[in-house]
Every structure is written in structure tokens, then in C-alpha cells.
Length: 68
Image (cartoon, rainbow, N blue to C red; front, side, top):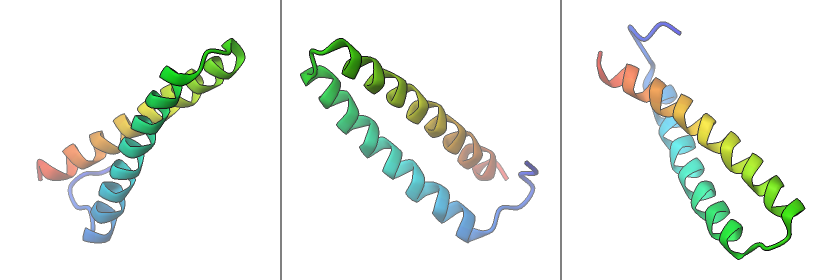
């Protein structure tokens, strides 16, 4: 993605998504700590890792836009 220009709407959308992901990760982490069944825990771990990866991508885009 070309980071020379990112419209304000895109930045706002990315920031909202970042906030949603951070909240989601926090909730998932709490549920993982409360879960004791292995199959459920495995699913939570997978979802948690996917959310972390998406958060990383969003933050990289925001960082690239901020350095302009």
C-alpha cells in the first residue's frame, strides 16, 4: 500500500478498528484465563492470534500514515 497519502476517513476507520481489536483481545484474554476445557481453549487461542495479527497490520498502516 502506498503510504504517501491516506485520507482522513481511512485513518479514522483504522483507528476505530484498532480500538475494537484491543477491546476484543482484552475480552478474549480474560475468557481464556477462565476457560479450562482444552477444545474451547484451543479455539480461543486461534481467534486471539488472528486478532493480534490483524491488530499488527492495522497499527503498521497507522504508523506508515503517521510518518508522512
